[in-house]
Image (cartoon, rainbow, N blue to C red; front, side):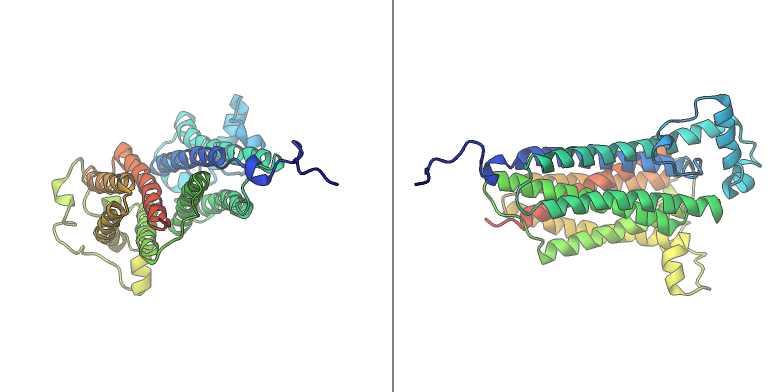
Length: 357
């Protein structure tokens, strides 16, 4: 007759699972993704994105160490349209090149670091059997998104090496949105795991929350187009130019929009119209987030409501300041950081609204 006493070497899966530990790890990765969004913003604003003309996943982790290596990198960069048409005629020196190289190198190094910080613990949790049932496919999907982000990043950089003095604004938008979708997925999964540790079911995405997130994604997409088109000064440049907001060049609707290639082209590629859409769609997003905040308070999720209101309030102020300052780098970078925090906060709110009570 078999003993009813369980073997100490056959602990049930539920005992060995570590949802809280995995949730903490995912939130660390999410913070690193927000960090790389910031570094990516600096890379874009300093025109550093095409300073490294090759993708070397392993050897590229080290910067040039000798004068000869630096000269070889600089020579490769001098074949790009950006150097030939912009920086070369402006008299760029090797010291100037080292500055833009630094930011692109840091951006790529951070991407490699995030990959390791995600992949290595994932392998450990997997081998040790600590991943709760049903979460392996989701974690693999997040890993795949990270790989996709690297591929899209290089696809984006190639457009600036071969075709133009800057990277494609469509590819830049794809690169940013993949990062922010990954951020949202990390936060949502971490929150699901925290709920699991408390004995609660996974959250579901409600229709209202889906609408709020879709509206936010559209706003972020237009923000990326605006950045890629260098359209931040379309309202008029200058350090704290008070006429740059709410008007654009002295009027509500900007003049100079090029409709000659059709409406679709204008809405996606005209700097004035892209800036206008990004500026005013923001208020539609604010309206739906205010409603989300009210719903969260009724659902007794006040911390998430506070996070959302704090994020979008700060984001609006930073957006206006970015325009008025003529796109000062530190203000624009702060605007991008808070955009990532707004994604995390809205994901938190959507998760709270979808939780069964």
